[in-house]
Image (cartoon, rainbow, N blue to C red; front, side, top):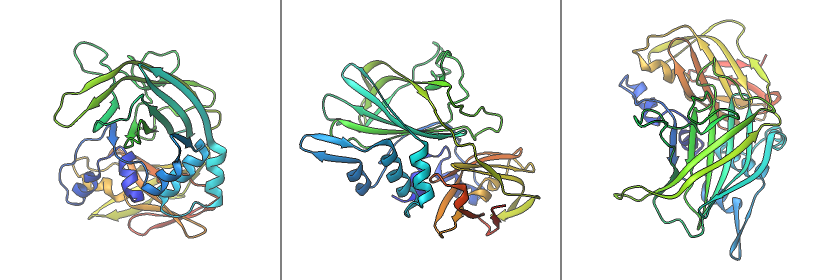
Length: 338
């Protein structure tokens, strides 16, 4: 599995959106995704879960994220990247058991606008169904909205939460264990609140459900798994790459880019408003990359695009801003670090 494949699994935009944008066709809608696919190739899974007799030895959160992001990058991590992950990973280790199914929030890594939360789900027997997932409950009888899964402590899951954007990736089961990676992204809206240090958030999971092909979904564990998540440290480093507007072009369309702010785990872009009916403009920012001083690269992909003038972009893995040489956009434009 390539870094691009892994991004598509984690991003909030359908991969066919890019293909359709190239041909100016109608794209599928964006939104929260709950996907089921392997998180890592076999070599990383082997490193993650070391089978010893009948038990598993699980890597620390730092080791897990270092392996995971190295695989997404497709190249060895730099010393700065390795240190960044070690310094910013929070070991959590909270477990809740409902009807024989235990969820453990193992670790998390975050900056103000992006957070990854790693879970482990364990059952009393091996998982055999094709799909297993946590099914959010409806907030009312009219079935218009479902409960929120991540919100500030003190609020109710039935209230709207501004922290719900992102994706969930369920790994294939290994015996009676499944790894789950949650990616929360606040770059979908420039006005969306950032994550804050020391603020307790609630991760709210409900009703573990199995769904075999062609068979009705079955709730195998009805109940709630609630966890309190507090980020002890969030790296707030940001660098503005533009001192003046830059026009970039691709697919026969252009964007007049007015701001591009690089963070350790993503970018925020601003540009002059574009024609909302021409979806090709979204792909202008796709397929860009961060070039580090050692020559290795980190892929950039859009996670949100608002034709009125803003876009959020994700990095395949965290970076140390001191190691960045330049950002190369899709049309070849290079934006050096100031």
